[in-house]
Length: 623
Image 1 (cartoon, one colour):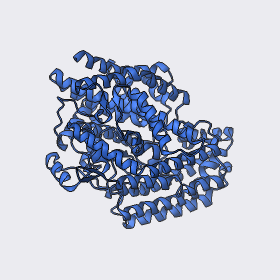
Image 2 (spheres, one colour; image 1 turned 180 degrees about the horizontal axis):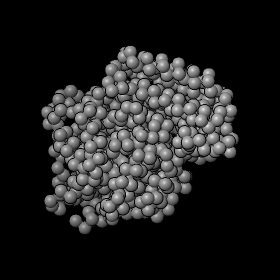
Image 3 (cartoon, helix red, strand yellow; image 1 turned 90 degrees about the horizontal axis):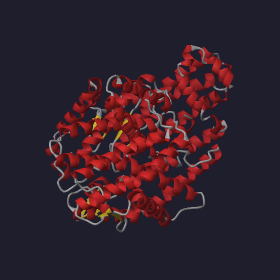
Image 4 (cartoon, one colour; image 1 turned 120 degrees about the vertical axis):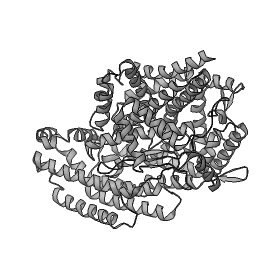
């Protein structure tokens, strides 16, 4: 799409939220000890894309992409309005083929880079490939711009040709961006300058965060190792981890403030030139969701804070024998929680079994990821933190990145990412231009996969204590997915709005952060020194402004969707798979209609939130 930056950008990874299962990536002996307990952890085989960065096939594809892009430009630039429907279809087929080719090279460069973001050679390779792909994309930029200048009636007539009509969903999505597109030279300038603008600051953030070290008891830990301490049963370790995070974040606060100010201003400039009125309007457009739908979601969640997070954390404080939880206690395990490490083989069995109970086909697709080395699970120094599922391109297959250390939440993260993977496999049939799903719906299959796994574990719970632990763990995940993400969205809106009035100081951003934390988490959480800097490490604020509400959208949607499944399982699987196969070809209203759901109805969000409050009700009853 026009505002996607690169033709291959639509295939970039769907990065996962920090906080949905922190994992350690620290010193060698710790990794070795963990591997003995967890068993052999899979590492992905990128040779399905290319053997290595120096592979002749990679160089040949880059060269072919460049040559074909130039030929495409020479053949079609300035001529689209004169083409017949069949000729336009032929042009789109070539454009789609180029998207797949360039997406393959870009995907490989990214996946190779995240394997060790501290490796200078990998960083150079990724930077050089990104730069070259931007240059190639500049040759192709005219196509979408020119296509959008064709008269509506003329284009509608051309789409009566079946070969062009096939691309109607993509063309109609593209036309939605027409009011915000600039003249060709300006679009080229925006695209080329992105290399030294937001893309450069994105990379600066990633490499800085990967290189940061946090001192705990004389040891230098990476960020995920330190965040993992916040889930330790030992309160002193949680407190030490929090103090280490605060110290290092504070030491680097000026840098993260500069990055935030720069990216917020960069976005403001782009929005102003394009004519976006609201600071999140570009994100809503990319997500193909109406602003009023997002506003209704945000209002519903914020109104529900007292009956969700406030109420739960008050209970949790009581369980931990405290009047209030310190912020480092928020994700602490419950006193009776089983914290043993889950071997990889058991995690695989748990997730595949849960998927299989819902649909053997779903389990079979997920099993392919294990069998064909499409998963990279071990923690390694320099490896990108967190987890994601990268769709690559339809001619290849998705890859999943994890940082697995055997916690129950890591098992749920595996279920989540495999949900993305299954979705990406099923949607690949739509082709390179239409397989990509808007972010609001991209979380549907992942959260549904988590829900299937959670419900399977809950059915196996044999006593009240185990049920309580499982329910509490799920409630915490849902609070992290719904409450926390809407709080993050609120924080972003306030930061971007304030940036319009001038550059923000570290103290001002800290103040905004603390205001939304107090509102969303309630009086049962006490914030210790340094917590005001914890906004610095959230990658979504850097890579995908306003992306975070998609998690709350997906979670509430899946809650309603799963309720429909429980009401009537007959025919549900078929409708569910049809929804996933649709990729980006249908609006959320079309996809949800077969299930009798409507996200435009304000009451829709209340239904999803009631599932969370119902679980908290059950926890209260178990007391």
